[in-house]
Length: 469
Image (cartoon, rainbow, N blue to C red; front, side):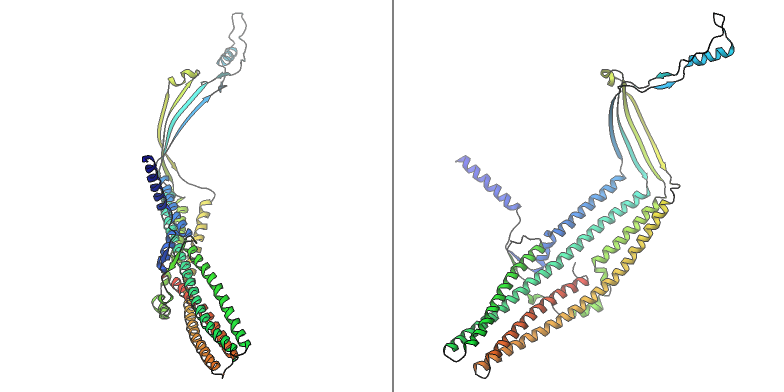
C-alpha cells in the first residue's frame, strides 16, 4: 500500500506539472484589447519578430567580439618518410680549381687536375617533428570596425521597430476580425427577428387559409420567404463559426479553443468628428507611423555604411604575438625530451595606397544608395499623407452610408408594418406584404454590409494616423 500510495502521488504530481506547462484552451472572455494583447504574445509573426530581436542582440555581441583579443591554439605532428634536403656546392671542387689554376703540382710531379664531385646534400629536418603554440591578434585601430559597431546597434534598433510594425499589423488584423464576428452576430439577431416575425405571419395566413379567407398562393409566398430566411440564417451561423476561427487564428490561439467576446458594437466610437479632427490636429502624424520610423532607420544604416566605406582609406593597426614549442628528433621515443621554445610580439600596420580605384567607386555607389533612401523617405511622407486623406474620406463616406442604411432599415420596417395592417383589413394584397418583407431583408443586408465597412474604415483611419501602437 505504501508503494502504491507513493506511485499515485508521483503520478498526480507529474500530471499537475504537465498541465501547468500546457497552453490553456479556455474558455476565454476577451474584450478587443484582451484579444490584441493575446495576439502580441502568441501570434506567430509577432513571436518570430521577437526572436529576430534576440538574433540582433547576438549579432551585436558578435560584432563586439571582433574587437576583442583573438586567441587561437594549434598543435601539429609530422613523420617524414623522406626528410627534405638542401643542396650545397662542393668545397673540395673549388679548392682543386684554385690549385689547378695556380699550377700546383702533386707528388707525381703533375699539375693537380680539376675534380667535379657535384653538390652536397644536407638535411636540416629530423624524422619526427611536433609543434604546440598559441597565437594572439588584437585590433588597435580599424575604422571599419568602429563604424560596424555603431551599425550593429542600429541594426538591433531596426529589428525592434520591425517588432512594433508586426504588433501593429497584428492589432489591425485582430480588430477587423473581432468586428467581423460582432457584425455576423448582429446579422444573426436580425435574421432571427425577421424569422420570428415571418413565422407569426405564416401561422396567421395558414389559419386564414383554412378558414377560407385567403388563398393558398398567399401561404406559399410567405412559406418561400420563410424558408429562404431560415437558410440564410443557417449560412450566416456557419460563417459566424468560421469568423470565430479566423479571429482565433489572427490571435495565434488554437482554433478549437472556446472564445467569448465581451465587447459590443455599441462600445465602438463611431463619431465622425474624429475624422475632421485628424485634419487639424495631426499635421505631423507621419512621425507616429512606424513605417516612417523604419525608413528613417534605413537612412541611418546607409549613412553608417557610407562611413564604413570611407574608413577603408584609413590605415589599420593591430597587435600580434605567438608562443610555440617545437620538438624534433630522429627517434620517436626521444621526440618530446627536448623542446625548442619560441615567442614573439609585434605590431602590424596596413596602409592602403592604391587598389585601382575600387574603394572610391564603392564610396560613390554607397552615396547613390543613401540618396535613394532619402528620396524614398520623402516619397513615403507623401504616400502616408495620401493614405491618411483616403482613409479619412472613406471613413466619412462609410459613416454617411451607414446612417443612410439605418434610415432605410427603419423605413422598410414601417412599410412592412403598414402593408400588414392593410392586408389584415382587406385593403391590401399579400404581394405588397411580400414585397415589403423582401425590401426589409434587403435593407438589413445593406445595413450589415455598411456597418462592417464603417468599422473597417475606422480601423484604417486609426492606423493611417498612427493611433495604433
